[in-house]
Length: 178
Image 1: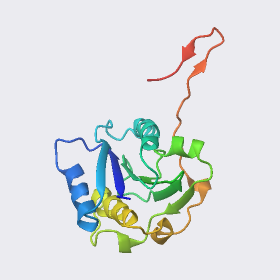
Image 2: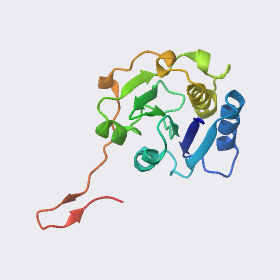
Image 3: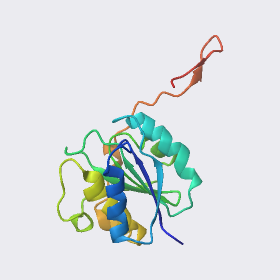
Image 4: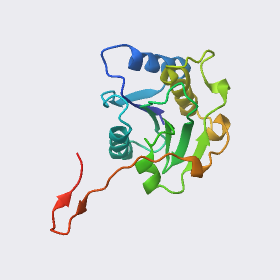
């Protein structure tokens, strides 16, 4: 099967950032099929990214690698996670962007990505999408198991976003956020 890598970012398309990530992926796996879910997430809107990911990933075949780079904490000590569940692999920062995924998949295997052998040789503080996420996704698409990327991540350290669910009020009104 042809490896599929999806990209979901808040980069926009007015500059070269998304294209550079694609170049890194294709340099390491020229056979990869790269699908842009969107690059138009509002800047640093982790909740919007969580909803978009949750609504999109299910329509891709098993084995797809889903890369989420909506990362207000880039350059900080936040963890990067590789998650395997329901036949899909997800790469994302531990910042709540995977909240909906974890709510519906309690048995997911979660790895902390820290094996620099799978990163670009020089990692900047501000472009982990290029230097870590893209090359790691390419290596996964070539068949490495996510256990090669680092140790199991303690699920107690997962960060969850406060995503409010719609509900019916006492008066029968549907209450929610858009």
